Image (cartoon, rainbow, N blue to C red):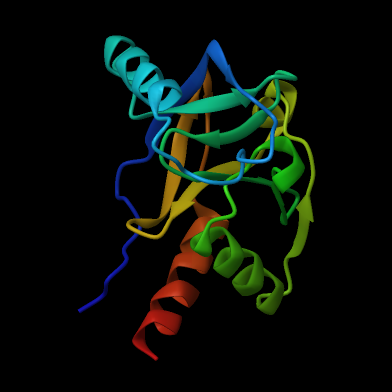
Length: 160
């Protein structure tokens, strides 16, 4: 049985902007200091969303409440660099490796609100759910073309 499967219905996501993630020595770790994530979760529920993007103190996307963020534009992947506050997750590392094996260009660079709106596709990754594709951000809708390819590679890797 497959441990991972792509979500059938895409996620509806927006930005949580009331509290920003601090850029410091502990920024790449999930820790017991969960207030930012709790507050973002409350905001997510009140806005009836599936997930929220977390911004760093510079106003750029660094992660979501529970996942790393990947943006697809013209068949290349971008994820926030660790310097922007992304969590150094196991699944993030695996997706970068799988993407490279599938001949996709991969970049670690800053993701702005504009980058999200200009994306062809957005998906989230974590070790529990694997890959989840985003169907809607603000008023823009997305497909799950690249995330479908990557989840199949992830499933094959998990079988080994």
